Image 1 (cartoon, helix red, strand yellow):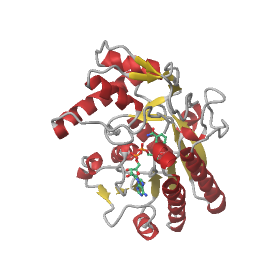
Image 2 (cartoon, protein in one colour):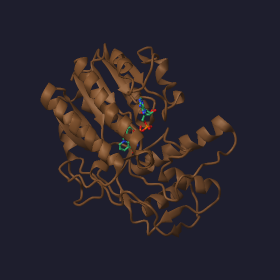
Image 3 (cartoon, protein in one colour):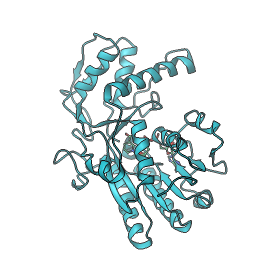
Image 4 (cartoon, helix red, strand yellow):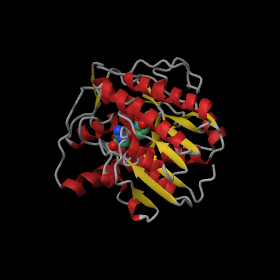
Length: 339
Ligand SMILES: NC(=O)c1ccc[n+]([C@@H]2O[C@H](COP(=O)([O-])OP(=O)(O)OC[C@H]3O[C@@H](n4cnc5c(N)ncnc54)[C@H](O)[C@@H]3O)[C@@H](O)[C@H]2O)c1
């Protein structure tokens, strides 16, 4: 689609990926970016810079995808929609009904509003979680739905509802199956923090980073601004419908990741190995050739550079906002990296 001069509604635009999508969109010659978010996880701080651009605004009447009349009103003048709002893996695990409401009913509401407002293109945030553990590597878009989590179930439901809406009503767009996204604005405190932040948290306290099991669990880590660019590529593409892996196609084990973080932070602390706990997915790497061919998307930030940016952001953030070290709450012994 031609995005020049268009108005884009970014649902979940105050979150980790969404706030970066907003910034990537503002690099384009577009008319307006409207952020729609209920701030259950996203923050005003994430979008503070973007809102300085006169082409960007927050939809102030409301921002919940469960409030259908408000959602519908927000879409009235939009040409395209990027839908990123969802509850995350662990929330879905603990609160499946809430996950059903937001991820499934909420996504259905978005689809309905898109149809009612004749939205030209929808980009839906799916997840590599639809695949579960890899049965074949790298995982192409035809990899079976080997998912066993409620989160993955909600993403599969979202994909299929979108597919049916494309077939029945001609709603065009794509679903993006992100691999493991990381980068600035990632949660570093609170209940749901990712493995990288746990490692950094330990290092800050002078403690060894803990690796569960033998550290051979491996994932495809992709930097957040690359993922944001993928969303813009997906908007710009002319592909009428499809699902695409968004990652780097490079597998990194938790042991390798930990060693890299130790190197970057110049730490000589030894890794502490502890018995494996609960893990949702232990092996994942995406085949990224289809996204490159159809969406003209290719990753740019390698893991070491991305980690350096994440660490610098986290450090400046901890100092700037608090001046004191933040006590990080721990929800589970082992925090899954799948998302
Ligand atoms: N981060 C990852 O590694 C990853 C991997 C695969 C897929 N995804 C998917 O990408 C999308 C964005 O992920 P993220 O990491 O930026 O998560 P995030 O939690 O930072 O962003 C989600 C945003 O949606 C908002 N939101 C939640 N419920 C809402 C509701 N009912 N109405 C309106 N807004 C609501 C939150 O406040 C938040 O700002 C999600 O759909 C997620 O499932 C993320």
